Image (cartoon, rainbow, N blue to C red; front, side, top):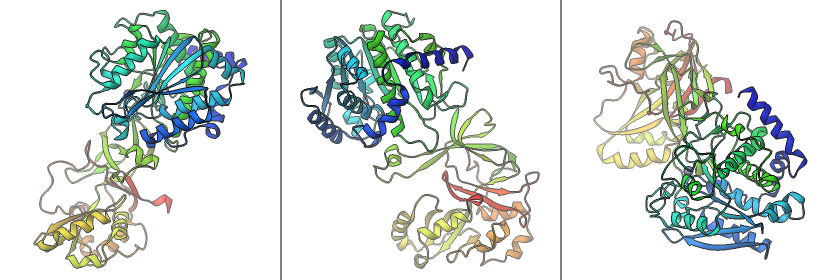
Length: 558
Ligand SMILES: [Zn+2]
């Protein structure tokens, strides 16, 4: 951040403190006073409806809840009207079904304002503006956690065509009410960073332009000032985590056209949070940001906020942030001699699953980049200096009768010993039954079980029972535990390269493409120490095992 920005920001943060709620007060009040406790990714239309009715019942006669339209599949879309001021503000969330963070915040805000209606700050907002809130504009998309509506149309690219009932409704509300400000509430790629700072963009803002030239009309100035107020409000809770959206003008989008039609629009994109901070914080940030902007709007049309604070924000930058970076290691995989390379990857988990409310979608990982990753920031850093990154081993199991000892726990134990894949050879008539078991036993941080019909050639490393615990994490002890049916002495006569070829099950033919490459699962072992890209099998230790992006073992944890 430039010094001038910081100075302005401090000024703006301190200046309005005499009036209304401080950002800290709002931030602290939210956990106790929020009206919707369900995490945003888990909130669907039915529960939202129930919550809005409960809100209406809690504040009888003091808010208006109307069904103002229906989605393509016939789900009611609600307008929640709060306040009695002459000027109107239109707020809508989740026009993209899988962008839910602001939806609970709208109900939380309505309840907060009405519960505290006697307080000067709440009274000023309720008397100063009328809030028109559409939580979950795209309920069909929300139901299946998908961006588009049930017609497969991106509602936010339908401002000109108006082919969607959701888009037509938004246009109608804008034309009926002529709001002086619109807040368009979205979520963006959670791995976006703030410029080249390497800081995750927790929020991105856009004072939407109404024309390609970005003409600064009085309305757009208001939108910029609102963005500046939001920057000041959120800075304490996400230092450096605020970006400016990367595109100023998008001709088919609603924000741009609403601005052109006379309602200046602020786009708020909720983004990513560092590891350990959950989805609910994004809702909380929306709550603080919007209430602070409204306070300043009713006070003096945001006059205290310099638009330059917004103008000087760094832009959103994609592809600059990854979940995990393994740096400085030597990568050895079955396609080439060892070479120095960083490895970066992302761990993809369904947001509803991560928030604790949906099915059993498997976690998947994707390698992002291999090679020079020095300019990528990461949520988690692993130092692989002096280590080898190896592709996990492949083991074989013979016969359907292995089901007596083979199970999920054994697959987890094999993974901890560095086995990524187990090839299970069964009689052809047993394949279906074995595949069913393989499905049952599958799970995070477990070796993947591949069923093959006999007669199949099994990998060199054959497993005949649950592996015994190795005497230590030295590679020699690990391999002894795994290969107990083979002569470990025989392995000792081979070069490391020959040993690895056997452990990878590729003694005869080498794969054409390396298994670790962009967009493939991130499965690897970390072996240390390595000197000049070589290891001493007796001295080296198995330090870490990752199976499809998930840690199966980390020596330091034990
Ligand atoms: Zn969106």
